[in-house]
Amino acid sequence: VLRSIALAPGGIVIRADGWMEGAPAEISFHAARDGSRPRLTIALNDGRGIDITADDLGQMLQKHPALVRPFLAPVLTEIAGANLLRPRAGDVYRVFDEILPTVEEQRALAAILPQLDDEDRSVREAAARRLEQLGPSGVLVALRMDFSRLSPEQAARLADFVRRHSLGEIDPAVARADLSFLRLAAEDADPRVREAARDQIERLMD
Image (tube, rainbow, N blue to C red; front, side, top):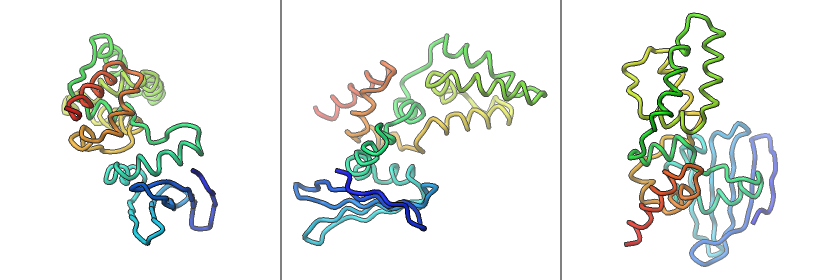
């Protein structure tokens, strides 16, 4: 439960109440105003607790998903009205690498690809906007492409596209064993992702 939010000279400070191991816990989150150098502290009344830091929120989530998702994600959701740490297209398609793009999805990106390397900058920028409009399906195709066959400009733009639709470099093996990640993925807009996530949950529960 959110207790307070404060903007200090050193950044943002969020305090909330939660539960850890069946006991009340105080949750504190500190970060610079640009989101860098986050620190999450979970303290129990008996003096026990956990204190983790990272370079940015994506790295913190990557290193400590079992702490960030249950303790920090609900607080951020209460503030923003949406789960800011919900897996994005780049995350779920990287984890569920058995999902392959359809022919139509591949054709949609293939139609844009030559223009991403056009001599005319305005053409390249227009193609980048069209790429963004492809959304998750475009991310899926980009992730399954062989970047060694692309020009440096094409590869750079596709890599940036995928990066903007990802929370960070999630370890697929870790994510496949993370029930909180899988439950969020089971609510993804793509039915292929939902099915893959539910299948993996069933495997873990067996």
